[in-house]
Image (cartoon, rainbow, N blue to C red):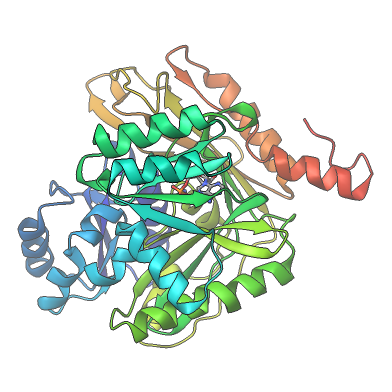
Length: 432
Ligand code: AMP
Ligand code: GLY
């Protein structure tokens, strides 16, 4: 089979690696990809928004499957362009992708179908939103309605911060059209986790659980980012809670989308909070999570391509997960999620022992080698017999390559290890 992956980040690097390992696959193309992925895929120079170019390429090469990584081309309708040509796609139609493309759509769907989420109001008029904020307690959450690369959410801890964010979004149009409507929602408390599923209509095949670290700095400080690291599995989320989230959130959402005439195909991602009232939805995405995918796929022992094809055919594949844990740490350019400088030469990594993976995201190629070209530059991940071992290994690896132009969080996976130590009351899972 010949498969095309659309996108250029660490998620697509991990997807290409996993797809290339399938015995069903002869060739993996990635458009546009990045020069760090060439060991696992052939990069082809079509941008994610070049619908015509991508479809022409798919037709010329008789592709058997297209997997679309990022949200923007999904919301813009790329999946439909391939389907019109009879090319199978793992990714939703733009109507179904609205579950990510419009938070207002997602919230209304959840309200209509009784899917647990934070209480909310939505506003386009600044004065109304402002007076609502005045009478609401803090902390409170303010979200741009549309796509904002994971940066359109502010958890405000003071009234002043809430007012300022509102002003920036609604009046200052901080995210352009995406913030011409805002959602103001109740701040949920609890442990966050990410639960994704392969979905086709009402068929929901859950993946294992992962946890992202959205804040830029250690101890969950600093601004929200696209994700600074992740780990999987998440042992402090009981399996009963995962079952509950599948039965009360993922399955009813897939069904709701069918009932609304927007059947979903692809990966449905639920960002969840385990509150005292059970799991509630923080957000839905219409695609694989980044960086969750980089720590989930290396733990998937089953063939991902066979699984995607089965789901497209309406069959339920059985997914087998390694009992090993994986911890992935994002290395970012200083200044991220604000503006950054690129052009920093990356180290030549030495991979000894085989348990380390590096997935590249914001990189470009120069004569002397790969250089940074974006906020998040790469993710280093390690498998270990348990999460503590995986964490130890990944930081032992990374500290050999510290560069003053980059930073990374030192506490990826720590919340899990701390809670395991507290629960067991033993020193078996000592924090590092
Ligand atoms: P989102 O882009 O919607 O996932 O939001 C980014 C981050 O903001 C989430 O991962 C949460 O940590 C936080 N967040 C979003 N909504 C809420 C909420 N209602 N209550 C508490 N935290 C939230
Ligand atoms: N890790 C969060 C996201 O993919 O949006």
